[in-house]
Amino acid sequence: MTVTTADMMRMSQAELDELYRNSLPGTIPDGDSQGTAIIAPGASFSNGLSSLIKSIAWRGKVFHREQQYLLNKITPFQIHLIKAQIYMGDSWVSDGQSIILDYSKTSFVAQQIRDEIREVAPCLYLGNAYWGKTRLLNFILEF
Image (cartoon, one colour):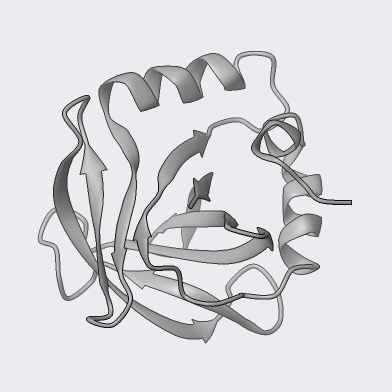
C-alpha cells in the first residue's frame, strides 16, 4: 500500500515514527518540492495549522543534489532562502541512514536546525525537524 500526504496528515506521532522507521532513505531528491508542515500530529487542529504555515511562511524546499545543498521556499512569494547542506548520515529517529539537511554551517538564522528525511513512497518524503536535539515537528516533501 502506498502512503499519501493525506494519509500522513491523519497519523499520530507514533504512526509517523513507525512509517519513518520502516522506510529507507531513498535517493537524495533533486528539484522543487511542495512542503507541508505537520504540527501536533493526530490533533483536530493539525490540518488548520499546516494550512496556515503553508499560506504565510513555508512552502517547501528546492534541492540542488549535485551541488549538495537546498534552499527553503519562504513566504507566499516562495522566495528561496535559508540554505542547508545535504548528505547521508545517521538518523536520530531510528537505526540506519537518513538524508540529512544540515543548516549549521550555511545559515545564521537556522544554524541550530537539523532535518532528516526518508522516502516513504515514490517522490514523497517524510521529515523530522530538530532545534538542537529537540524534535520540533514533522514535515512532508512532495516532488
